[in-house]
Image (cartoon, rainbow over all chains, first blue to last red; front, side):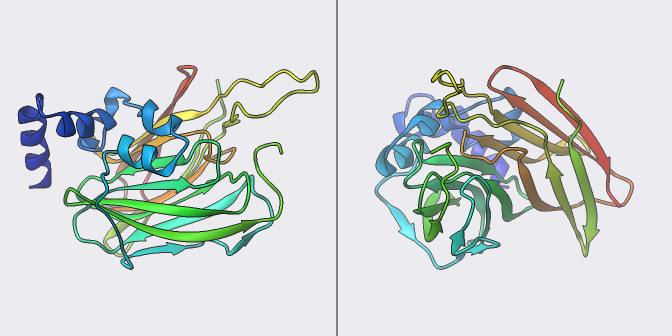
Length: 159
Length: 103
């Protein structure tokens, strides 16, 4: 069902700039990720608004209590390996992105979750310093965010 | 060629839990070597996980994913004995594909 809607959007969205942007980010086509789309604009962004925009989000990113961090420490002794787990309890979650506010490049990872995949991912990231971590969730075409601060005692970017 | 991924795919209730450990430097491009030369970025950009030919996870990564990346997620519809295939591509164009059987 969701897939069919995405396909329609892709077919009809060629001229609309916002939809074109969304399609270009790869957020709208998880099933076609074999095309090896990598969203350079989003990964190169150095500020929260830029990153949000490059990911297809707009001003209307809603803070949500339905996004939960797990396995994520309050204090990370080693910034080179910080476990991050994110679960979205928002229906129709399509993708989950991890952004680290004070890293040189904010965006750490984007996970596209086709229907049937549970809206839970966990991985390990590097953090340059103590920072807020944003979990940006796209669900049913809308964007939601949750924030958690992780304190880093030893930075992970060779610093 | 990099080392094989360590993959564990196990059935938990009606979901398949996939845990992967990849072998990759994930160099950020921020570090300098002893001579003060910047070490070029070298990192996995795309990860695709498929089950029975259907994509169950597609990820794009930046340099902030930790060295020797770990990834865990769950999907529905897997059965014991099914194959889960994981591929990654890094920014130099290197690729690696490994598969595991759901236990």
